[in-house]
Length: 329
Image (cartoon, rainbow, N blue to C red):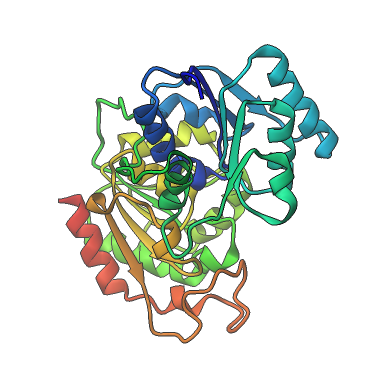
């Protein structure tokens, strides 16, 4: 192939996965230093591009505006009409992403091998198993170029100058099996309040506000506890993370954001496999898992065995407090 001048990357559709994809973007930049690299991001999490490694043009995909496979194809054709690409890397392995790839008409369309998706790509590769999601992404590039590559750190730009001594606490998750049960959240926050003098900031999206409000209402001591759940956009929440001292979070997108911003982060794992989806930068991350139940780790969105996630209920609160004090020092 002639010199690679224009590359397009379809980024993942979930906040945490998009954060983890920063390593892939950086790896592509290192592999093709003279190429212009553009990206496609899903509307709603596209604000995260402001914190990405330097990129070129941004194409924002809205499922509401481009509905169904016909809409996806229309979106791809729109991009094809604006610019011709030498390479198109597709990180999601969904059918809609594959259909979009076919419409973009890059010289080389690279994606993961899955069922009938091979007809939409010029180059398909098996997704590497039993590795971290970051390594899955970079492995796609490695298979395409035919060589082993160094895996860059997962990094979001953090230009925050004024750092507060606050601890941000995220008790939420999209999946019930990864969200702290109310009783456990209350117990942990009460214990933290007794142990440290720092301001505690509780965060959450608008749809998580009622859950966080319920927990706050049951706290024994609300002194210096600030509840901003439902009061910030995702973009504004990133600024809160960037300005804090440290973070305690469930396994969720915000945990990945904090880790990539360089914040000391404790992640409480319920469902989910930390070997595949934990925040990637280990130097500023403490992973806590019970590890005593025969069903661990599962990847279910709800607890099929106990009804409520016992793997979170039984976490050692003394050890959580010990780790909180450690990361605040």
